Image (tube, rainbow, N blue to C red; front, side, top):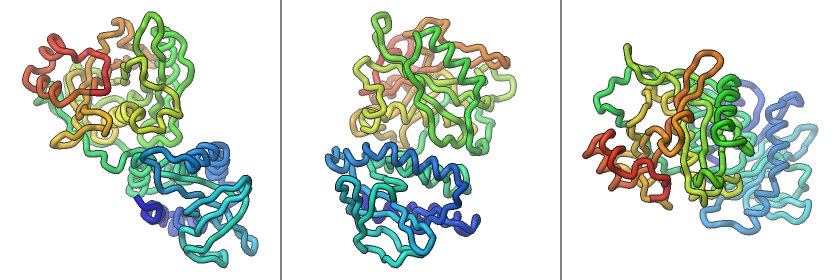
Length: 387
């Protein structure tokens, strides 16, 4: 994808900022920032802190990397205008590139060559396998955007360009779905839920090393808790918090679980570090873990054991590196029964369900046999994400 396309899309997303706020923090050009804008200041600080990742990939691009650009602040007559640069060159503390959008204040034009210093850096971006990396100022603006622009920005930041809609097949197949999509307000997290699930995971699996926190969380704050394989458990466990911030919208009289969180059971060879997750071949299971965790917020449809989510209709492989085209929700049978439920201090009973990625052959067998028979007779409880 051309960097000009990326800049143009980003510019369209944030036009509202100038019109609604009468100040501009624009992906398409000028960014006249008030000194008290703490969110943007933190975003710029984060971009500078992580710039070494950008510089390393720019120097040695990996397959799937494209559209490298940096944003810089250029002073003119007392104003600071933040502009994107393409065709980037880095030489020590110097940054050079072509102006990638039309300036509003500085005496430059689109396509002009500009050279400055690292002190002027305010952001960076590149595309890896269709997923936008960096662009911290755009992330900081998400909570303030109207829904339509926020959804478009989320697609740039969190989804692959070719990601299809999820097709939901509940179990039983005729299970009613009475709910409605929930408001997509930005969530800062549910501390009661996070503390209880984290303590439960540590008690059941051993102390976790770290948590992967979301930067911006529309609808729900979905964090990931990895617990690496060990001598007594020859597989990784990665769990969510956030799906249970709000209850599932169940049919009247249903005995299904109102609150769920999700887990992945992964082979011990699967990388669990942030650097490896920059590669979509390693990240796609975690993208789906988050996507399914948000599903009931975005659709109003409830989820439970036996529910199947397909990658489009007809289904397509979830990623180029796998044949899997669907995911099945089922109890994590490879873990002890005590693992499956978490009692929260506020009275919520949260059920932990596993995601099992299915190949077309396994999905066909599931649909032919039905959920209970498939689980009883097949490899549904296997540890596999790479069909």
